[in-house]
Structure formats: C-alpha cells, structure tokens
Image (cartoon, rainbow, N blue to C red; front, side, top):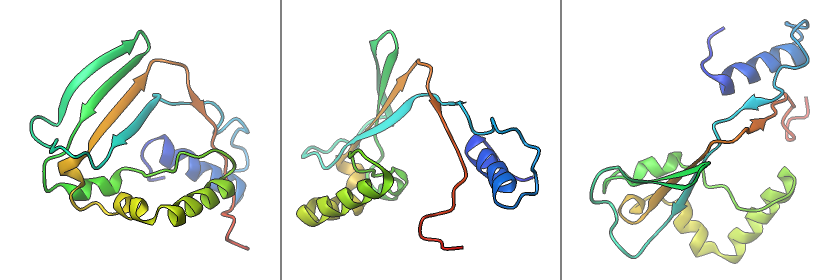
Length: 151
C-alpha cells in the first residue's frame, strides 16, 4: 500500500473493503471517529490596502483558552498559492443543495464569483486567517460511489 496520512489511507482501505471486496475482514469501525485538529482557514479577500509586506505568519492571538488565531499572508506575485485555498460556499444543507446554492449565488453575483475564482493579484490584497481550537473534534469517513457514476 502506498499512501500517506489519514485522508489517503482510510479512503483507500474503505474502497478496498466496500467496493472491490479485497479486504472483507477489515473492521466496520474503519472511518469512524477520526480525530481532527480543529483548524479552519478563513480569508479576507480583495482588501483595498496592500497587505503583502512583512513576514508570512505575522501575528498570533489566543482568543480564549481553547481558540488561537494566526494571521498569514503571501508575498506579492505568489498568487498561484491561492489556487490551493479551498473556496467553499458558506451554505448549509446536503451536498446537492449546497451545489445549487453556490450556482445560484454565482449567477446573482457574477463579478464577485469571478474575482473569487481568479487568483491574479490575490496575494497583494488578501489575508489568510488560521483558526485553531483545542477541542475534541471527529469526522466520519465512508466510501460511496460518486452520484454521477452509474456503475
């Protein structure tokens, strides 16, 4: 097996157990209660000020006994780095509903969506906040066929 980390190994094992049936004796507990480090990336995009001067991780604050925040920035010209930052719509509901809401918001606000999806100039005018919490947080992974695959 060639895989690294939980997000590579667990899905691989789930697929081998549930899809290909090559590892049928793996526990049914596989993928249950996978501990996370409770980190969230939040961005402040397209500020009017140039914010790319200085060190990459510029400040750290303890908001309360369980929550810490770091302010991060990228050098001017490193706009491609923003392609790795996931732009997830802040909507609720099942996966299909979230996709529909994202598409509707994209149609209602095409300029805002275009700026969000275009990284050129982002490093100069955007800040990345890393929020970390010391709490018990778990995710659950399971293998499912993609909805658009019929076989």
